[in-house]
Amino acid sequence: MSLEIQKIAVIGGTGTLGSGLARRWARAGLSILVGSRDAAKANDFARSLPQQADGRPAEGASNGDATERADIIVLTVPFASQAEILEAIKPQLKGKILLDATVPLVPPKVARVQLPPEGSAALRAQNIAGEGVRVISGFHNVAADKLHKDAPIACDVLIFGDDVAAREIGIGLARKAGLRGLHGGPLANSAAAEALTSVLISINKRYGVDGAGLFITGIEQDRA
Image 1: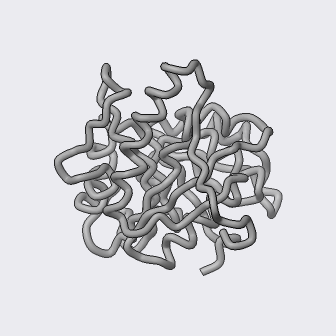
Image 2 (image 1 turned 90 degrees about the vertical axis):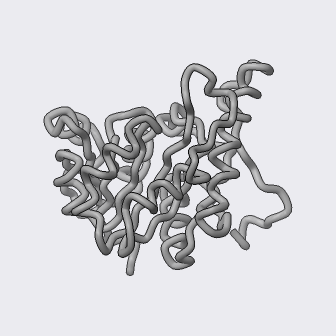
Protein backbone atom coordinates (compact mmCIF):
# COMPACT_ATOMS: atom_id res chain seq x y z
CA MET A 1 0.00 0.00 0.00
CA SER A 2 1.68 3.18 -1.22
CA LEU A 3 1.35 6.30 0.90
CA GLU A 4 1.45 8.48 -2.21
CA ILE A 5 -1.77 7.05 -3.67
CA GLN A 6 -3.86 7.04 -0.52
CA LYS A 7 -6.57 9.53 0.25
CA ILE A 8 -6.52 10.90 3.80
CA ALA A 9 -9.62 12.14 5.62
CA VAL A 10 -8.85 14.54 8.44
CA ILE A 11 -11.86 14.40 10.77
CA GLY A 12 -12.03 17.60 12.76
CA GLY A 13 -10.05 19.09 9.90
CA THR A 14 -11.12 22.68 10.55
CA GLY A 15 -9.79 22.61 14.14
CA THR A 16 -6.31 23.79 15.10
CA LEU A 17 -4.58 20.39 14.98
CA GLY A 18 -6.53 18.99 12.04
CA SER A 19 -6.13 22.08 9.89
CA GLY A 20 -2.40 22.24 10.64
CA LEU A 21 -1.86 18.62 9.63
CA ALA A 22 -4.10 18.97 6.56
CA ARG A 23 -2.13 22.01 5.42
CA ARG A 24 1.25 20.29 5.82
CA TRP A 25 0.08 17.09 4.11
CA ALA A 26 -1.51 19.00 1.25
CA ARG A 27 1.73 20.95 0.80
CA ALA A 28 3.54 17.58 0.61
CA GLY A 29 1.24 16.60 -2.27
CA LEU A 30 -1.03 14.16 -0.47
CA SER A 31 -4.70 13.75 -1.36
CA ILE A 32 -6.71 15.37 1.43
CA LEU A 33 -10.37 15.31 2.43
CA VAL A 34 -11.27 17.75 5.18
CA GLY A 35 -14.05 16.31 7.33
CA SER A 36 -16.34 18.35 9.56
CA ARG A 37 -19.85 18.29 10.97
CA ASP A 38 -20.34 21.36 8.77
CA ALA A 39 -19.52 20.28 5.20
CA ALA A 40 -19.71 23.86 3.91
CA LYS A 41 -17.14 25.00 6.47
CA ALA A 42 -14.92 22.07 5.53
CA ASN A 43 -15.18 23.01 1.85
CA ASP A 44 -14.27 26.63 2.54
CA PHE A 45 -11.14 25.58 4.42
CA ALA A 46 -10.19 22.90 1.88
CA ARG A 47 -10.13 25.50 -0.88
CA SER A 48 -7.41 27.37 1.03
CA LEU A 49 -5.07 24.35 1.00
CA PRO A 50 -2.26 23.80 -1.52
CA GLN A 51 -3.17 21.71 -4.56
CA GLN A 52 -2.56 17.97 -4.54
CA ALA A 53 0.25 16.33 -6.51
CA ASP A 54 -2.05 15.82 -9.52
CA GLY A 55 -3.08 19.48 -9.51
CA ARG A 56 -6.54 18.93 -8.04
CA PRO A 57 -7.66 20.96 -5.01
CA ALA A 58 -8.29 19.42 -1.62
CA GLU A 59 -11.95 18.77 -0.83
CA GLY A 60 -14.26 19.27 2.13
CA ALA A 61 -17.07 16.96 3.18
CA SER A 62 -19.17 15.83 6.09
CA ASN A 63 -17.37 13.52 8.53
CA GLY A 64 -19.24 10.47 7.24
CA ASP A 65 -18.68 11.24 3.57
CA ALA A 66 -14.99 11.99 4.13
CA THR A 67 -14.55 8.71 6.01
CA GLU A 68 -16.33 6.76 3.27
CA ARG A 69 -14.11 8.15 0.52
CA ALA A 70 -10.71 7.87 2.24
CA ASP A 71 -8.24 5.06 2.97
CA ILE A 72 -6.72 6.58 6.11
CA ILE A 73 -8.85 8.40 8.66
CA VAL A 74 -7.12 10.86 11.00
CA LEU A 75 -9.21 11.82 14.03
CA THR A 76 -8.28 15.26 15.41
CA VAL A 77 -11.17 16.17 17.70
CA PRO A 78 -11.41 17.11 21.39
CA PHE A 79 -11.66 14.23 23.85
CA ALA A 80 -15.21 15.27 24.74
CA SER A 81 -16.28 14.64 21.12
CA GLN A 82 -14.23 11.51 20.40
CA ALA A 83 -16.78 8.82 21.25
CA GLU A 84 -19.72 10.59 19.61
CA ILE A 85 -17.89 11.18 16.34
CA LEU A 86 -16.44 7.67 16.22
CA GLU A 87 -19.88 6.17 16.71
CA ALA A 88 -21.19 8.35 13.88
CA ILE A 89 -18.49 7.32 11.38
CA LYS A 90 -18.16 3.70 12.55
CA PRO A 91 -20.07 2.23 9.58
CA GLN A 92 -17.60 3.82 7.16
CA LEU A 93 -14.45 2.84 9.10
CA LYS A 94 -14.41 -0.90 8.46
CA GLY A 95 -11.31 -2.13 6.64
CA LYS A 96 -9.48 1.18 7.02
CA ILE A 97 -6.68 2.65 9.11
CA LEU A 98 -7.75 5.03 11.87
CA LEU A 99 -5.03 7.32 13.21
CA ASP A 100 -6.38 8.70 16.47
CA ALA A 101 -4.70 11.88 17.74
CA THR A 102 -7.11 12.33 20.65
CA VAL A 103 -5.64 13.48 23.95
CA PRO A 104 -7.79 12.90 27.07
CA LEU A 105 -7.75 16.47 28.38
CA VAL A 106 -10.55 17.18 30.84
CA PRO A 107 -11.07 20.92 31.46
CA PRO A 108 -10.47 22.84 33.55
CA LYS A 109 -7.52 20.79 34.89
CA VAL A 110 -5.85 20.04 31.55
CA ALA A 111 -2.39 20.08 33.16
CA ARG A 112 -3.35 17.02 35.24
CA VAL A 113 -3.19 13.51 33.76
CA GLN A 114 -6.73 12.09 33.52
CA LEU A 115 -6.73 8.92 31.42
CA PRO A 116 -10.11 7.31 30.66
CA PRO A 117 -11.28 3.98 32.20
CA GLU A 118 -10.17 2.12 29.04
CA GLY A 119 -6.57 3.09 29.80
CA SER A 120 -6.13 5.56 26.94
CA ALA A 121 -8.10 7.46 24.33
CA ALA A 122 -6.58 5.20 21.67
CA LEU A 123 -7.85 2.03 23.35
CA ARG A 124 -11.26 3.63 23.65
CA ALA A 125 -11.12 4.36 19.91
CA GLN A 126 -10.30 0.72 19.18
CA ASN A 127 -13.17 -0.46 21.39
CA ILE A 128 -15.62 1.77 19.55
CA ALA A 129 -14.30 1.12 16.04
CA GLY A 130 -14.29 -2.64 16.58
CA GLU A 131 -12.67 -5.43 14.62
CA GLY A 132 -11.65 -4.76 11.06
CA VAL A 133 -10.31 -1.28 11.83
CA ARG A 134 -6.55 -0.90 12.19
CA VAL A 135 -6.17 1.71 14.92
CA ILE A 136 -2.93 3.57 15.44
CA SER A 137 -2.33 6.74 17.43
CA GLY A 138 0.09 9.66 17.33
CA PHE A 139 0.67 13.44 17.11
CA HIS A 140 -0.23 13.84 20.81
CA ASN A 141 2.76 15.98 21.78
CA VAL A 142 3.06 18.40 18.86
CA ALA A 143 2.01 22.00 19.53
CA ALA A 144 -0.82 22.40 17.01
CA ASP A 145 -0.16 26.07 16.27
CA LYS A 146 3.38 25.23 15.13
CA LEU A 147 2.00 23.04 12.36
CA HIS A 148 0.63 26.19 10.73
CA LYS A 149 4.10 27.71 10.38
CA ASP A 150 6.74 26.88 7.79
CA ALA A 151 9.55 26.62 10.33
CA PRO A 152 10.92 23.20 11.35
CA ILE A 153 9.42 21.77 14.54
CA ALA A 154 11.83 20.34 17.13
CA CYS A 155 9.51 17.52 18.17
CA ASP A 156 9.33 13.79 17.52
CA VAL A 157 6.07 11.96 16.86
CA LEU A 158 5.55 8.61 18.59
CA ILE A 159 3.26 6.25 16.67
CA PHE A 160 1.52 3.43 18.54
CA GLY A 161 -0.43 0.45 17.25
CA ASP A 162 -0.70 -3.32 17.36
CA ASP A 163 -0.31 -3.54 13.56
CA VAL A 164 3.32 -2.77 12.67
CA ALA A 165 2.56 -2.13 8.98
CA ALA A 166 -0.11 0.41 9.95
CA ARG A 167 2.38 2.05 12.33
CA GLU A 168 4.81 2.42 9.42
CA ILE A 169 2.14 4.34 7.52
CA GLY A 170 1.68 6.61 10.54
CA ILE A 171 5.43 7.22 10.63
CA GLY A 172 5.31 8.07 6.94
CA LEU A 173 2.58 10.60 7.63
CA ALA A 174 4.73 12.19 10.34
CA ARG A 175 7.57 12.56 7.85
CA LYS A 176 5.24 14.07 5.26
CA ALA A 177 4.28 16.64 7.90
CA GLY A 178 7.96 17.52 8.37
CA LEU A 179 8.42 15.64 11.64
CA ARG A 180 10.39 12.58 12.72
CA GLY A 181 8.13 9.62 13.39
CA LEU A 182 9.20 6.80 15.70
CA HIS A 183 7.68 3.45 16.63
CA GLY A 184 6.28 3.71 20.17
CA GLY A 185 5.11 0.11 20.45
CA PRO A 186 1.64 -1.41 20.85
CA LEU A 187 -1.55 0.63 21.11
CA ALA A 188 -1.61 0.25 24.91
CA ASN A 189 1.58 2.33 25.07
CA SER A 190 -0.35 5.31 23.72
CA ALA A 191 -1.28 6.02 27.34
CA ALA A 192 2.26 7.30 27.93
CA ALA A 193 2.16 9.94 25.16
CA GLU A 194 -1.41 10.93 25.97
CA ALA A 195 -0.48 11.48 29.63
CA LEU A 196 2.67 13.34 28.65
CA THR A 197 0.56 15.99 26.93
CA SER A 198 -0.73 17.16 30.30
CA VAL A 199 2.84 17.15 31.61
CA LEU A 200 3.94 19.34 28.68
CA ILE A 201 1.06 21.73 29.32
CA SER A 202 2.21 22.00 32.92
CA ILE A 203 5.77 22.69 31.75
CA ASN A 204 4.53 25.36 29.34
CA LYS A 205 2.73 27.14 32.16
CA ARG A 206 5.54 26.82 34.72
CA TYR A 207 8.38 27.92 32.45
CA GLY A 208 6.54 30.17 30.00
CA VAL A 209 7.38 27.87 27.08
CA ASP A 210 5.70 28.27 23.70
CA GLY A 211 4.74 24.66 23.00
CA ALA A 212 7.20 22.31 24.70
CA GLY A 213 7.70 19.14 22.68
CA LEU A 214 9.21 15.69 22.86
CA PHE A 215 12.56 14.66 21.35
CA ILE A 216 14.02 11.18 21.72
CA THR A 217 17.80 11.16 22.05
CA GLY A 218 20.19 8.37 21.06
CA ILE A 219 18.59 7.58 17.68
CA GLU A 220 20.52 8.65 14.61
CA GLN A 221 18.40 10.39 11.98
CA ASP A 222 19.09 7.74 9.34
CA ARG A 223 17.80 4.99 11.65
CA ALA A 224 14.44 6.63 12.31
